[in-house]
Length: 462
Image 1 (cartoon, helix red, strand yellow):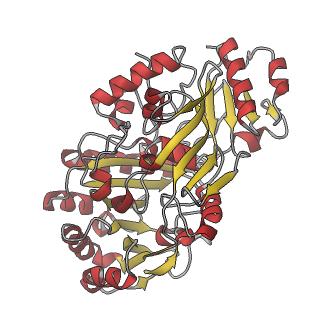
Image 2 (spheres, one colour; image 1 turned 120 degrees about the horizontal axis):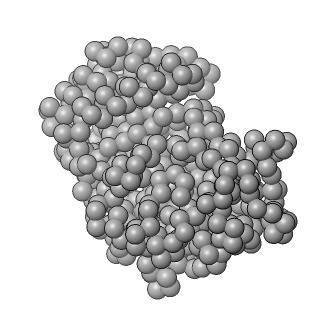
Image 3 (cartoon, one colour; image 1 turned 180 degrees about the vertical axis):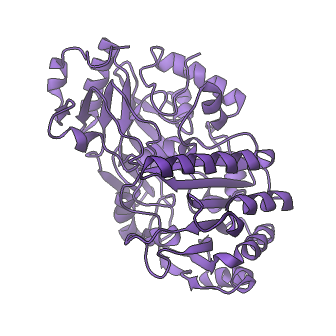
């Protein structure tokens, strides 16, 4: 590994078309800052890649100088501060090319889901986006990608047809089921452990509209709404996608009225079928408790952000997750004790959620991948905002308490994209089964034996 602040000569990087910056230079902060401000990056050098050639040049230099490398597009998943080494910023690579005949899109490394939605919507098509269209497509897909409509259509990685990727030896490769099949396997669910993706080709859905939004009740009705939702999830068809959340929303302008500053229980709904059928299906939720705010309606797929209403501005966040086997009455009791009204309105977790899994999320793909969450019945995630040390410490304590209490109901695994700050190797391995983790370590040794891609949720070479 290159010693901190002793980066070798940068002359080879002069061929890069984008900026090449060091600490103290004017553009440095712009290149290294991502969406999650809790992780402040301090690489020894950062480049702003403008295309695959820049990434090839950067990786060849890193390989020759044994410099560790990290990559960032939007920084939504930046749960680990990058110190020293080289940071490749792909945020300028936002091209999206839609082929309406094959219903596919070629998506470059820095594109957000909002770019894909804008390009696909004129053709009546849409992508398998997560809860925010502001997130980057490539990083999301590399971690499997848990879509809002996951129960109906599966993981985002399931629809990826091919990748263009630069491996740590500086070679630009095409990976699909026929060419480089092992590399293709590792990229779908194995995160960025074997290379830096410059673009991918994915299938699109012929789904211009959907029925979705949120049913919000005041926090006093949290238990009633949660127990009703839990029983309701046992009865709904696979295409009904939903998530229960406890929301303690700060009084900031980014949150719309009348939710701003409130303490709420919410069920978020996404239904790709007939709106009238969807309305009939969610009737038990609307009848469970007094509804204060109801935003469920038919909408354009490109307006999907209105379902979960996630923040669109950068902020310092601590997120974590856990896969659950099921939601037994004891599990519901434990969740309520930790984050329900009894925990107080000033509880430090902004959001604590339970997502209904199953459906297409539980079915194996035609082409094997490294996604290891298909056996989960539910998925728990949490987010805390950490603007200052006292609050950050409170968020950490609350996060630990919640996941320790819920551990008896979990599968023992997490999802790599929402795992949170990666710990030691045993902790990072929880994103995969032991068999898949061992295979990823073998692939890491094949494609990145020097462990150049060692930042973030990294796998150790076998």
